[in-house]
Amino acid sequence: MSLKESNYAILRERFSHLRSFEKVIENTPTFSEPIERDEEWLDAIKNLVDDEKVIFVYGFERGLGIADLLEQYPDRWFIVHEPNSELFQRGLNDYDLTLVLQHPNLHWLSVGEDQLPLLFNILSSYMQDRLVFIAARKYLLDEIDHLRKIKDDFEEYRISHLTNKFTEDRFSREWTQNYLNHLVDAVTVPNIEQLAGRLKNIKTAVVVSSGPSLEDDISVLKQLCGHALIISAGSSIQALQKHGIDPHISVIMDGHAVNERIFSNPGTLNSPLFFTSSSYYQISDQKNKGKIYGMLRNDLVSQYMLERNDSDCVIIPTETVAGTAIQVAVVFGAQQILFVGQDLSFPDKQYYSSGIEHLSVEARSKQLETALITVPNVQGGFNQTDRSFLIMKKAIEDLVRQYSGVEFINTSGRGAVIEGARYVPLETMLPVLQKQPIVEKSIVEKLIEEYESSVSVNNDRLLTLYSKIRGVYNEIAELPEQIKKLNSQISDMERYSRSKPAKAVKSFEKIGYMWGDIANKSWFSPLFETLLPIQISNFDRVLPLISNEERLIEKSALVYKHLGELVGKIKEQVPLLLERLDEASERISHKIESPDRMK
View 1 (cartoon, rainbow, N blue to C red):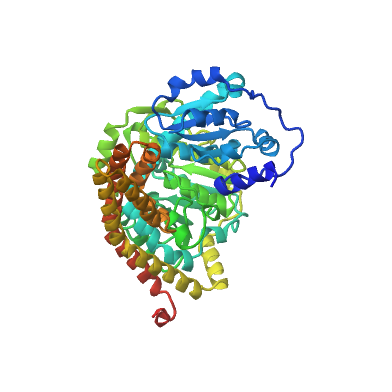
View 2 (view 1 turned 120 degrees about the vertical axis):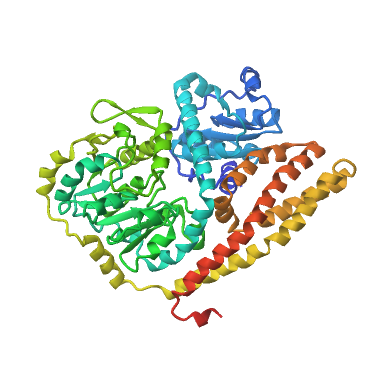
């Protein structure tokens, strides 16, 4: 095997996320990395490295500097990024990189700017209190400003990553129940991907949110109902119903039981409903027809059970249901999207438009009291807002940038400025929209009916899904006994570490096998990373400490504390998870034409 083939073989085995570099590229850049050991560079980074166990290196080149770092710091994990894919390919083709690529402490390798989000996720998962950021000499000399931007981008990503973890932890039980209970809908209800582009003849969609500006524009909104696709986002359905407006489609994403109050009034479920896999399942259950299902890209549970992956899902999770509504409009084929009631702030110290009644006066007042941030509004002044609204604002602005082929117009007359969406008063838009073709009131309902009439429910798929859930149920039912045996070995290791090191080492080896038998199950990651996101994340963060600790007593203490704590949390979740799996399989069994075939 040639050195080139050897390099590619290791790359495919250890770093399969990297795209193929086997295509020959002409005129690749030359290397600036010196062959001799760069002592000056190594000395300069000593103070940076300190005692941190995870080190990020920007720049791979020929791997010479990485090899020196691996040798100098044998007890650290290295996460390496090479921004220049052509330079990396040249190294693979021309040099023997096998010793570096297969080194166990080269924990992660990414190449090319398009892999930065994945890299940031890995860094956020494993880094300790701070990021040790080292750059190859080439990039320190030539791209220092870009390096600063990369570091700033990572810090912003990490804040968002931590926020998302806490959000996932807060709603973990609700989302798990919703994901599992919506599995039957994934098989029996039209999904958004199947209806993509079906309304592309409609130019304009209006995404209606619940901000105070909605009340100002409600009379104008009534007049344009037949000239654009009206999409209500979350709680705005209450205000629309109060004023006698039935949107063409309502969108829900929130997984909390607060939706029972939002949709408690008669008529709030008259319109067709788009619901995500995270949404509170009892709302969509109330509708027998006129529903569209959407699996979220971060819904690991549904993707596992249905054998799909995130690239199969068009709906990106965002911090606001308006973000989901925007995506529904884009998937249907809208060329222009108007924002109505999208204030993202508290104009005139108001929280919602009238008619929005699911949140108590006390809760509204409390949130207003903590709104200590100001943002520019569309009138040239400033509105009070809070961190929650700022996160939502960023999510919407990210979507606006992503869908560059769609025109976004912000008509929320008292709301915050939304970057990328020019402000135009809704009454100014009205004459323009009234010249557009009529948008039939039942257009989405008919679209759903047409699809359902052409496609029948796949009974075999329901049976397969039912069998998979029951199989997972049976395996998880065995977890408590497995954890009991694992805990015994963890206790033995901790006890033996001080007096019988050989036995402690044997226990550690058994722990590795036993924990691997649990954590490597195909269902473990989707189910327990959803149920225990903070606990799993915290364990990932200390894993480098455990892996690289050479002192047996200290290693035993780390295993006892961190793995023991994690498996205890996992064991606590087993009864709840079994109950949820039971509930999900029961819902599916009711849809199977011949339940006796399951016996």
